[in-house]
Image (tube, rainbow, N blue to C red; front, side):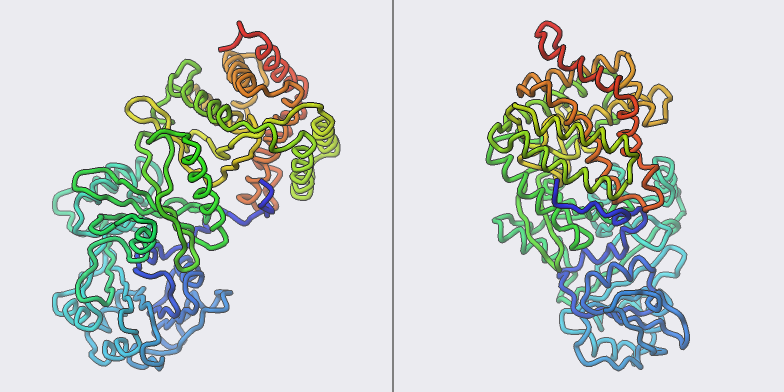
Amino acid sequence: MLASSFEPGTNLKGEAGGAHWSFVLDDLDVHRALVLGRPPEASLRSLARLCREVAVAPGRPGRKSAGHGDSSANVRIIDAVTPARLSLPDASVDLLFFCDPSVLRRAAEQPSDLENLRRILRAGGTVYFEMPWWSPSLDHGARDRLESAFGPIQALNLTPGLGREAHTVVPTNDHETNLFFDRSDLQASVLPGRVGRKLDRWVRLVPGSGRVGRRSGYLCAGQGKARSGPPRYLVDLARKAGVSLEGFRWGLSAPGSYASKKVLFFLFDRPGSPPCYVVKMTRSSNLNHRLENEHRALKLLEEKGIGVDGELPRSRFFGHDGGLAVLGETVVHGKPFREMTAAHPQCPHVLRTIDWLTQLAVRTVDLSAASCSDAAQDLATLLKRYVEIYRPQDHHRRALERQLESLAAANERFPAVFQHGDPGTWNILIDPSGRAGFLDWESADPRGMPLWDLLYFLRSFCVEAGRRTGNRDALAAFADSFLLRSKLQSFVTSALAHYCSAISLPASLLEPIFYSCWMHRSLKEATRLKKGALPSGHYTRLLGLCLDHARESESLLAGVARVQSCPTDRR
């Protein structure tokens, strides 16, 4: 909780980067990459993070490249009209990227170009290029010449069919994995949402559509034969942990537009079976700590015997390659909570999720980990950062300070618990038996704050329930459920009271825990907001709403304490 500086604007939408195909290379420790043509901005940024040096040869004299405006110190521009005129040293390039199909075709037709490129590519180096559907396919002669120069070619299916960056990569000849990606809605579409996915699927199924809407990538790994299994670095990391990935099928998905979103490999061990492992990877070494924390948390939960198979992933191998964290986990199977829930208080999926979070706290509660004074001191550090970032109104700041003062003065034992850290409805799957499975333990804390997980889940559930009734305003849905007398507020009160009773959470600690929860969520949200947009952040407005309606907030928490003290009123 205290490890982050919560710097605003460090995780903005649209900055996820590109060149996701680079994750399927056999080795992510790339010394020098040579880019022929003009690379997309996002691809160049990602390659600059991955490689020690990126040389860009735009092709024609005076042709501007994205590299001219790139601030990375390891990106340089080479003025060479044709590949034959490149004057790089022998065997000095590890990765050759043709980002322009026309440059590739010209090189395939010019023996001098291919000969020079083969000279500068080290033995075992990799060549990658793409062929969008609107570009003519390579003829057999050109392909034969490329294979003669660089080695066997592995064809890859990429989605979306349009756009500058591919977000999924699956071997073309692996029909089963392509079908799994299609049925699981993993394939990226040009248009967002289900409409876009259905349109893409319709284009692929139309008779006579041929290559329309299809996009292909090609990988030459410089080996004696085309690669058939997962990238070598994954195989090696797994082998060190005693896990064999030999003969496994694979597919890559790089979803989302935030840099914090992980790149995912789905690994299949048997024909016709669902994936048995999912591999999570960071896009930048700056985010390695998230996967490192998840690995530690999952190992600790496994040691404690918490979570039967399917309720949460198990860490099976972990390491780093190319400076990036790599975590191999067992797969949690099921359908998204949002698709399965009826979004009302009697929904069994909601009740089971609440019970699971409550039992996680019961089985891990620790009354010796910290005192109330310790907890208040840690939260004061967060409050100081909150004030620096959001500049709240004076009466809000003073109200939060009073809450922490009351916590510090409490003569109670503080119940620290194992905290998931991000149990929103989007991180929960429901299996065929109705059991809830929890994903994404990156924010887990073995000695975390009590009640925060349940508060966060209830907020996201109540917002979902509001959407089902036509209320698209997330803040209004929260107010209706938490601050106003309603059936949902009664449900929230009962769920919180049951949790508090189960871990013997003193009623005097409810208010500081309640308010500090939303303060912490505000800090986490700050990384996704530009400085000018901070006042419009959802969680800082939610916190302000609770502080401005302190009477209603206190009424909710008083109701929790009252139900907690009356066993006959509990759920």
